Length: 122
Image (tube, rainbow, N blue to C red):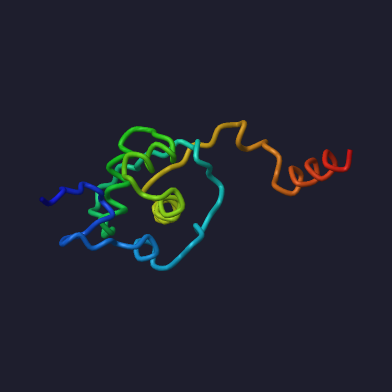
């Protein structure tokens, strides 16, 4: 008995497409100015885009503003891979990312580490 798999990360004959192949081997996005809660929306374009199927899938989910985390859940792509794909689309001007004022003013990682160190010192 064969179980049907509807996971978009699998190809024909049940072969698994590894996440690093979807990102061209990259492990970090080209930009880090958006978070999981940032809202992403596709930019309407008149010209047909020459994009990979995964990019088109992401753009299809972003027809209306949706959070990065929600796109990851809907496309069933790992969050790290999705962040790289969204950064690609953002760099090419295919999507816009809306960042809340809270995200713009949150403390940086060094400040948070400093606070944790001070708390541990107590």
